[in-house]
Length: 143
View 1 (cartoon, rainbow, N blue to C red):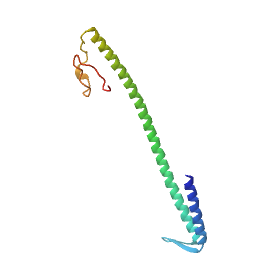
View 2 (view 1 turned 180 degrees about the vertical axis):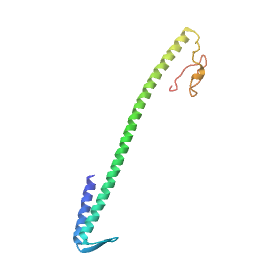
View 3 (view 1 turned 120 degrees about the vertical axis):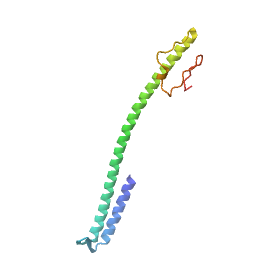
View 4 (view 1 turned 45 degrees about the vertical axis):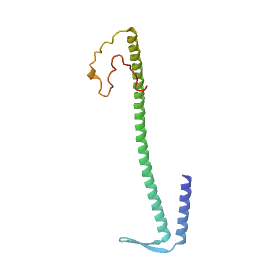
């Protein structure tokens, strides 16, 4: 950033020196408008308008980037909250899986038969794996 400032000041100094060395009087015409002025005024006015235009465009770009950053930060916060909720759900499901494994192990240890659940099999989502056959083992997809 400091290098850009030094370069801008060096350029401004070069433009000022150039303008002072070309101090003759000229006629400026634009459409029907005509004016007699010094070349120094024209050069310095053109440089000032150029700097002003660049500054305005830079400001518009900064505002646009700040708005985008604000939107992305809001999106990040939403995603972090969603991630925390999903991690909590995962922990709950892992606890439920461990409880069900313990219950199955106890049932197998006592030799009792597993009573069918009151929930119909069609109630499970289609992407769930099929229940293990009798005598099969429950294993987690992570294992």
